[in-house]
Length: 229
Image (cartoon, rainbow, N blue to C red; front, side):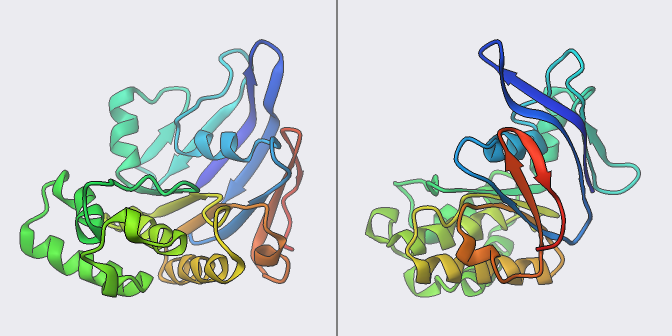
């Protein structure tokens, strides 16, 4: 599903955020991406959802495929291709990125409204996602009244609105206490068990330390390990 071939990304002339990274992530996997701050985790995730691209000269290649006839290539994808590609993804960030002027229901519904879903379909899907993430009781609340854990659950529900094939989570528990971090992880695991591929960046060993999912370890931009924990 995800293939990185000798990917290098250089910033500010000489600093290599990623240095000759080669890896594959299969459909249906749950993969932890770990490493110290500045190791290149966010850059690698940006490569996957093509917010960044490899260096032009010998920077390698990123391929994300959703079947033989649906392959996105960092070397050839146009901006219009990237927009279409991202509609097949769900992306969750550490800082939630909710719409402050909309309640929980409308934050989740937003992604469906802009893609033309009918009102009845939107209502059904939003209630399904609120139940999945345990946030139904807060459906009329605005983001500023929610706890950090609640806001992240809303963000996950919103990311899942279009039933994405791939969910990318960049430090989704970084601002949460241990109990809320574990709850968010359990939601992501449930999503994975339902068939969505999940790639989760984290620096929290309490989440990945005893799990049997594969862990990719970055160290100063290089892939140090890609084995099962």
